[in-house]
Each structure stands twice: as C-alpha cells, then as structure tokens.
Amino acid sequence: MSAEVFRNYINGEWVDGDTFENRNPANTDEVVGLFGKATTADVAKAAESAQAAFAGWANMAAPARGALLYKVADILDKKFDQLGAEMTREEGKTLPEAKGEVRRAINIFRYFGGEGARMPGMVVPSERDRVHMFAIRKPIGVVGQINPWNFPIAIPAWKLAPALIAGNTVLLKPASASPLSSWRIVEACHEAGIPKGVVNFIAGSGGAIGGAIVNAPQVKAISFTGSCDIGNWIHAEASKRRLRIQLEMGGKNPTIVLADADFNAAVENTCNAAFFSTGQKCTATSRVIVEDAIYDKFVEALVARTKKLKVGNGMEPGIDIGPAIDQGQLDVNLRYIEIGRKECGEPLCGGKRLTGGAYDKGFFIEPTIFAGVTESMTLAQEEIFGPVLAIMRAKDFADALRIANNIPFGLSASIQTSNVSRVFDFVYGMEAGLLTVNLPSAGVEYQLPFGGTKDSSFGPKEQGPAAMEFYSDWKTIYLKY
Ligand code: NAP
Image (cartoon, rainbow, N blue to C red; front, side, top):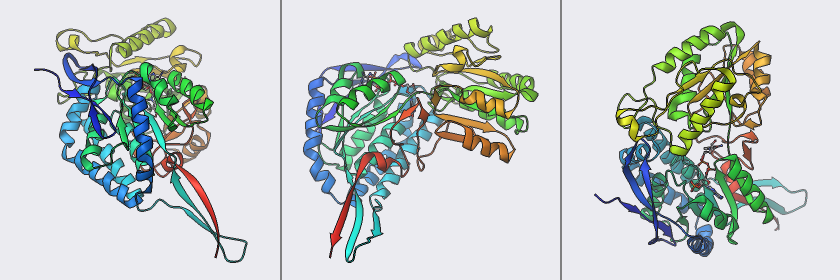
C-alpha cells in the first residue's frame, strides 16, 4: 500500500511538491506518511499570503474568530481516537499519553476560543476633565511558529490558538520527526472555514527553511520551541530585525526528595517524571536530589520500581515507555550513558539499547539510572532528553536547593515533602519557571503561564492569559468628549 501524502498548505490550498518520509520510531518498517518538503519559495509565498490575509482576519470580530476556534476543537474532537493513534505512530509515546495530549490540544482551542469574547483591555480614570482613556489589544501581524517533535499536537495548539484569537496570521512549521499531528490541526482549520492565508503549514527541514521563516520580511514575531542551539541562533538572527521572539528551550530539571516526603508517592512521581514519554518531555526530571537520611532506601526503591517498567510499542496495552524518537536521539542517549559509565561506574539499572524481535525495528532503550552523581559531572549539567536519570545526594534541604539551582537551565523543578515551610522555601528559592509540589515535575495544564527562566527560555510566556502578551500589542487611546 502506498503511503498517504500530506501536502503543505499555503493560501488556503494544499500545494504539490517534493515530499519527505516519516516513519514510526517503534517500527521503522511502517511509513506514517509522506509530507510536503517546503522550499524557501514556498515560505515566501506563505508569508505573502499570511500578510494579505492579515487585515481581514484582524478586523473580524474577535468572538467570530473564537467561534471558528470552537469549530476546530469540535472537528479534532470527532477524530479523537484517530489522532491519538496517529500520534503514537509518529512520535512513539504510549496511546494513553497521546490521547491525553490530544485532549489538551482540544481544550486549548476551546480555551482560546472563549478568549475571543473576553480579550480584556484597560479603562482607567483620567486626571483631566472629560477625557476617557483606555487601552485595547491589537494583533501584531504575521507570526512564524517553529515546533519541536516531542509534543506534536499540544505545542502547535498552544502556539496557534492564541495567535489566531488575537487576530494574527501564521506560518506553522512542524518538526520533521512528527509533522502529522499538527497537519491535522491545519486540516481542521481548513474544514472549519478559517479564511485562506490565515494559517499556512510549511513542513520541511529546519536547516533548509528555518532561515527563510525568520527572515521573511512580513514576519513580525517568532515563537520557537526546541533546542538551545537553534533557539540561540534564532535569537541572534531575529534580533537583527528587532522581531518579537519567544523561545522555549532545554532543561535539566531536578526533583528534590526530602526525608519527610510521602515515600511511595515520591518514588512514583520521580519514576513517572524521569521515564514516561521516554524522558522526552522538556519538563522531565533528569536529576533527582535526595536527602542523605533516606538516600539508600530511596535509590533501592526507585531502581526496583524502574525495573518494572515495560518498554515497547506504545500502541500495545500495558506498555509504559515507547521508543526514542529516532536514531539520532537514541545515539545521544547511548553516548551520555557511556559518559555516565566513565563518570560514576555502571548504571544501577538499564544502560543498553533493547534488541531482539520487535525491538530491532525501533529505537528502544532501557530506562537507566546512575547513582552517586555529583554536581560537576556532565550527567548533572547537560540535557540528554532521554530516559537517563542522575541520582544525587544532598546533606539537607538547603544543600538540595543549592544543587538544584547549580545549572544554567531553569525550566521545571519539583519537590517531594510534607513540610510546608520547605515548600515555600522552594517556591521562592528555586530558579525555574514551573514548579510542582508532591507531583511529577512534568505534566502541565493550559490555563496558566508556561515557560522557564535562565538559559531555558527567552521572552514572554506561553499559555494561559500570559499567551496574549506575546501575540498582541497594546494600543492606548486618550479621548476628549
Ligand atoms: P530542535 O532540533 O531545535 O528543533 C526544533 C524545531 O526547530 C524543529 O521544527 C526544527 O526543524 C527546527 N529547526 C532546525 N534547524 C533550524 C534552523 N536553522 N532554523 C529554524 N528552525 C530550525 O529541537 P527538537 O529536537 O525538535 O526538540 C528537542 C528540544 O526541544 C529539547 O532541547 C527540549 O528540551 C526542547 N523542548 C523545550 C520545550 C519547552 O517548552 N521549553 C518543549 C519541548 C521541547 P526540523 O525538525 O526540520 O529539524
């Protein structure tokens, strides 16, 4: 059977052109689809069409834009099961995780659809007689959105929905490793009747078309999620034109486990945050910092729990962990495991690629734990983005917090404790944009701001009401009556 073709979408039309193949990371015999391989000329056309569509879209009443976002949500909802299965096939995460992410994307479209009828401005009293002063939000224009592969529907949704409700038009670039889920969003936008040119989908290698997106003269803002290397390049490039930018990048997220924590919950939360989704969440835990008094007991329990995890094809029931996204990420994981071996000896569990039978067709790797990791080790400092966890020992809470903060990143962090004072010390002292208490470090909702600090992030936050700060400008009016 020949593979289905998913073409790029420019100015309201599905465009022909060269394609690239996308394969299932759990079974590389299976082609998920052929995707349009955009050229720089396609990017230029998309930017022109987005510019041409801008005035009409921006001038549509915001609640009418909201009604279209509700329609997008309804269309996605009707395909809920299909979208979950497709995501598992393209990204590898388990079916329940994929469905959870699809549900989140649908909720995001509904949430921002509702924003169309709110869009709060400001009205304040003037010091002058008979002067009415107020401020309203206006869209910024054409926005470029560059997405990573690890949340292939939630991240494009949380970039696209607020951009659209604010009245912007969009060039959406999916990650080449997982373009299908966001293609489905664009298909839903088309079916919902969002006017031509408002949403443009341009798949293709970031190395080949990324520069054309950032440098398209019509583009006024770039929202990027991905690696620090590409994010830093976008920062330098976009700053030349003083573009508005929003960068969400890497992390090295800690979970602090104190002696007074609910022990079993702490083990479960750490295991979940470190290994589910194959450790490929930007908010995943990659360092667990354990108070000395329970260190040995915690290490033993965490290793025992981790050994029970089932690795395999995420479509199968009972599987906890799918494959790495591709050969490149698998190689990165294995390289860091070798570094770990040199730095602190054999891992307490895992450490190998899984082979034999169906494993040979995918990029499967054992969840891996290194203990006795210290602050200066590579394992404690560099993002791996795979199921490789470093366990570190801390004398007490203050030492744990110091270790947790001793990295250049600041995306997410978690604490496991029953001491409310330690919780607040953590809330005020931890240098990260997203904190959890007695929960896994990963697992966010859409109603509050999302983003990190330090080298993890740059620019205004995504999601929740904060998203509107990036996607709109204030216009202030003084009116004498
Ligand atoms: P990546 O390699 O930086 O790719 C991200 C996106 O940038 C992809 O669409 C990629 O296209 C594109 N790209 C590549 N080269 C480009 C260029 N020269 N100009 C413009 N765009 C370019 O990151 P990834 O491997 O997809 O994702 C993993 C990283 O994302 C990790 O570091 C993770 O921590 C981070 N992440 C962060 C968050 C957060 O919210 N902070 C969330 C998720 C992931 P191609 O796919 O075609 O190469």
